[in-house]
Image (cartoon, rainbow, N blue to C red; front, top):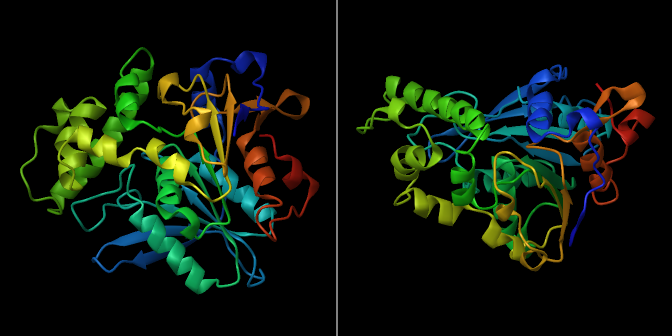
Length: 338
């Protein structure tokens, strides 16, 4: 179902760049205590996990998996804010750092928008570890694309009870070119720099031992993905990567109850990437707002203070669909400002 979102920005934060930058830069870093776990993989690589402390939780307490975006990590404010809400709802929470997102991984390949195998491995492990706990996931941007693609690939065999995806680049090719326009080039430069640093570190550590082009010449996503992302991850070229990794083609196959939150003014992409109602399965609720930017959605809270609306909307969606996911306090039920 495609429907209008209830999100409304304050008058002073209607601009998409203001929404995007306020949430990612101006917001204070949400405090959070976590326990670290390294999950070793059969191919010799690893995944780093950041867990909420779970002392005293019953064995059937829900588990919420958080998937970060490109260049994201535990230091992403949206991830920390949601994990805080997960804790306030008496649930387990874990952030999955995709391969290479925490520190350089051991293999030449790294995470990308279409890599769903590692998410599947983690969910398999969680089902073994917590056989009586319902599982849910929330993915942002690239992480949302991975999540939607996983759900479409698995169909009725998904291990998740419900899911949420935010600000997803459903059509990677369109997004790769859209972010080259106007002020959005600032985001492109920031993201490309972060990706370049990962590759440079792996070259220094001799993890990548194949000839690479001069990384300083790769200044946009099509050139970077064509020279780096595609060949290191088994794709023929950037267009092959975009075609295989985009989640848009998988939406119709999703059978898990899924909320998708998107803003029409997202500066990371063109409105043409927004799927039509006919592309959505009956399990999807797609909430579209006119404003909100990219993983922004900053609203007006108590006494005019900024409120991070996603941290109200996502738990609200989980409640009733995720057994045991219940607020411990009134603040948890209504979301928090600040």
